[in-house]
Image 1 (cartoon, rainbow, N blue to C red):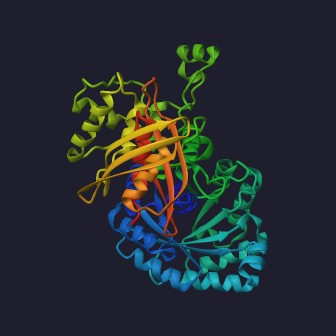
Image 2: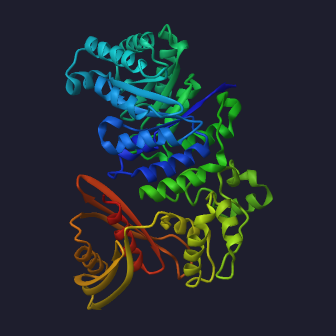
Image 3: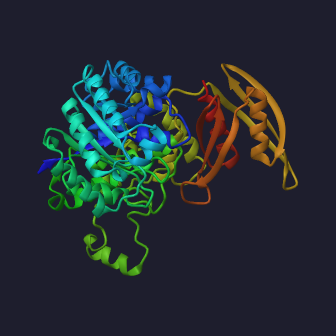
Length: 497
C-alpha cells in the first residue's frame, strides 16, 4: 500500500474561521494531542499575519518532535522570511507558500496577468528553498482555474524546488467525480508530478469536502489536508477524522496506509471543541454523541445479536469506551485517574490533586458522575490558574427582569467586592464583574447548555468577548447556571493580555 500523509490545519485554517485567537498554550495543548493522533504535518499558523501567530509557529516548532511543523505564507518574500525565522528551531519544518490561480481571483483580487502569477510563484518557491528543503505550494482556487494553466504553474514550481503541490477546492465548488478527475489530470499532464507529493485541500460549502478529499485520494493524492471536527472557513474543511475512518474501514478499496492512532480521535475532537468553544453536533459522524447510539428497536435487536449489523466502526477504535466505572463522591484518586485516562486525558501527578478536588465538589452535588461530567470538568480545568478568581456571588431578583448581583473577585491577590443591577441575574453578574475588573470588552456571544444527565446536570456556559481587535472565548462549568456563566465570563477576561 502507498503511504497517505495527514496534514492538519486545525490551528491555521480552522482557527482563522472562529472569530477568536487561540493563545500559545491552547495551540500547544491541541498540537500535542494531534501528535498523539499521528498527523504527519501540523500547520501551526501564518507567521507574517501577527506576532501571536509568529510566536505560535515558533513555540510549536521548538516543542513538537516527530512531526513536520508548517507555516503558511503568501508569495511574498517578506512573508517567507518571517516564516523561516519562526521555523528556525523546528526539528522538521515546512514552508507552505502559494497564490490564487483561478481567472476570477487573478483578475479581480490580485489584478495580475497569468504570466505574472507564474513568475511570483516560481520566485517564492526558490526563495523558500534558500531556508528549507521542504516547500509546499498551494494553488488557491485550483478547482475553478483553467486546467492547462494549473498544469503549467505546477510544472514550473516543481522545477523551482517545490516538494509538495496542493490542489485546493477553496470555495467548496467541486463534486467528487469532478475533483477526482482534476487530481488525475494533474498526475497525467504535469510532466514532473512524480517528483513531488500531491495534496488535496477541500472546503465544505456544498457538504462534499470529505467525499471530494476521498475522491482525490482514490485518484492518486499522497496527502490530505483537513481539520478536527471539520472546522474552517464558512461551512468548514474536510473533517480529518472522517477521512481517517473512511479509509480505515475499507483499506483495500483505497490502497493507502496511514501512521495514525485512531483511538486518539475522540480525545482530539473533545479537546478542540472545548478550547475553541465550537460544539460538536450530536449527529456529527464519528465524534458526535449520537454516533454510536441505537434508538430503533429493530436496530437494538440487531446490535444485541451481532454488533456488525449496525456498527461499521467499533466505538473503542476511535476512543469511545464501552465499559464504564461508576464514579461518585466515594471514588478515590486512582479510580478517577483511571477513568480519565480511558477517556484519553493524560494527567500529570502535580495536576491530579487539583482535578480531584474539583471532582469532589461536583460529586457532592450529584449522586453519579457521568463521562459527560468528566469531559466538562477537564474542559473547565485550567492548570495554570487564572489572574481573576471568583470568590463569592450573591444574586437577588425582583420580578422577571430586574436583578441585583453582589460579586467578590480576587484580582492579583486582592479581594474586591462590588454590586450591579441588570436585566436578569446573569446580566447583573456580568455588570458587577465589569465594575470590579474595569472591563471594557464587548460581549459578542453567550450560550449555556446541559452537558450531562440527571436533574443536577452540569451547565456548560460559553462566552465570547471582543477586545483590542481580538475575540476571546471563555468556558464555565457548574450545576448552577449563574455560577457557570460567571466563570465563563471571567475565563474570557483572563485571556486578555
